[in-house]
Image (cartoon, rainbow, N blue to C red; front, side, top):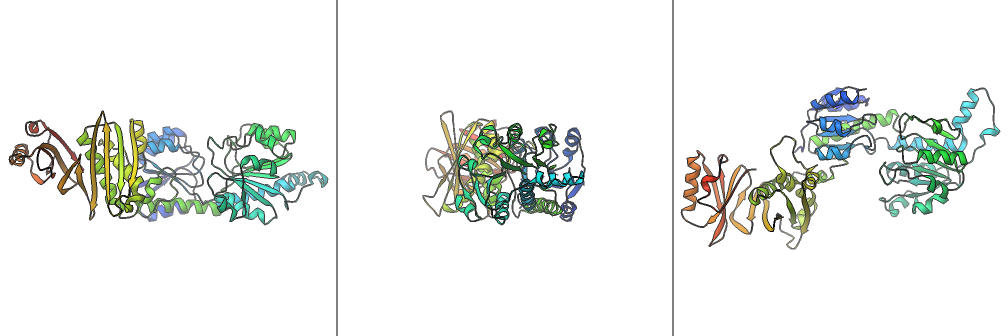
Length: 526
């Protein structure tokens, strides 16, 4: 079952032709339109559900907000620095990249940079082209026995380590996510950054650009490094503070730099590019035929697999969806949305604290998407671009709704979801489960139904004193409105007030006719 529907896809940059071909072979309408201005893109993207970019297209909040139908943004490459992921998430748009498409190409370029810095290959080549023969000027150093510090030990960092070890380099590294035991399997000893800086002859960075990595190499860190340390950045411009790098180069604290990326691309300040100890490239990390073919193929197949309900790969803002692609999860998603809708309708609360509890061992891995599904139902307002599993929790937070998830395995064999709404000193609770493939309501605010209520169609809930005349009286009100009673279920309360649920052919336009008969009433469509 597909979670989103995409018919038309816009490719806004030069992507390998296989991308368009794969998408078309699977029935999508694909348009390629490159070199658009921001205004052009804002006007064009309105007509598409999918957008595929590389690194040049800036998918800003303005672009995202202009794209009323957009469901997915695919980045044919690693990283999504050029996409406003927060704005996409708020609009319920899935953002995905191809995390492994350019791994080898970026790793190989990094290794080439290290080699170039050690032997001054580009400078020597330019000198020869100028008619010179300056052997002494380009005295280099071997890599054998030198220490390479790798900051970021994901796919690319790992491949760099393996390749440079073949030159006899010692590889040390830092990564806040990769466990030291894992990096040890590919020959990298992990340590803190404070330990790493003074040990390294060469340092290469392979991290995303985020607040914690911006300016990671700066005046302070260069001062802690060996004099003459050489640095490489084939990841993202800004990880190395460009002004600090220039100062370190001019003082000799940094002996050379290999830069494939810059804060501004192309760089407006040329001092680094023109420095004699800098080897620079125009962002060529993924610029190989193989990487482009791989990234184009990967993003197309990832989109197709998602649309066909097979799997979700490379999503950077919709991890909750990863466990929703099994057929078994779909009825539970429907249940969560229905419980959210019932909770809001019967409690009449729009804010407060929502506690979602999954019950039973088998639902342990479902807690994430069930919580999002409940909030989708709770926030449902009939608008075209409302809450979905991607943005539900974000929208809830913005609306002042506190959402808490809990899991209870007291009865391991139990399979149910409970939703409690607390607001203004009142608490409302609904409990439901899935019977077969049908979401059903078991309990409403402490009242257990004699027969589980099927959560589908038009439903009328009301609370009233138990009386033989109650059902005929309600049926009369419905008949007077031209409606038919299609089902009826009541709670087990033997005396006093009981909750009832009536399935009706259509919703009542006005509940005032029921007021003489019931204490509380709510209607909804699920």
